[in-house]
Length: 231
Image (cartoon, rainbow, N blue to C red):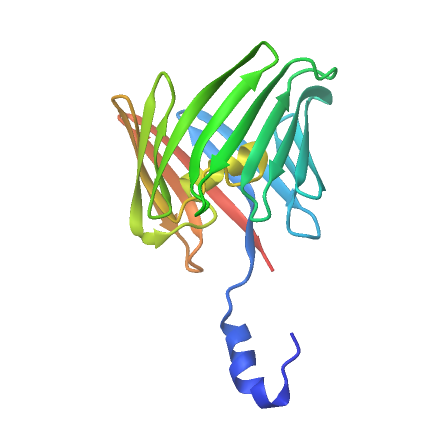
């Protein structure tokens, strides 16, 4: 930004105080004795270009409000996803193709209210046109309940911590579709499904970025460490 002479002190000082734009480039996920490393690259628009883990590669291409994700494993086709988002980046429709002929697929439609809060999703497939409906409850900008015909998941949040890269729900969307599937305002604190409670904790580095997410469920501990690229 070019500072006009009369605004040089106020505007340039504000720019100097602005935090750099930091994006996650590596996730190291340790679950029990298994370690999985995800590497993420970005295009010139700051959108995800590729995501790799082991021999699996996801390549993202963009056309308007549609994201195409081509997934391979060892160089062979494994899945192709088509994700439609609104102008705010919220998922409207996700179709997953499991064969190259595109005859085996699942399709999920997401509905929002007038405030942009997620209301429900409806999933159909190539084998069933009867939709499976999932209901969502959002309170104060945070998703607090996910209800399917077979289970209910509830979520709690750290109301004093704003959502940022590296929090639980953000990671779920990142490693799957490169979008935030479950919009939320604060960082997740716990997830309860049935009798299973998963508690979430975050380590933050000196730049205020999440350096590690730890999810604890009984004696099971999963940790995800992050590395960033900042501009």
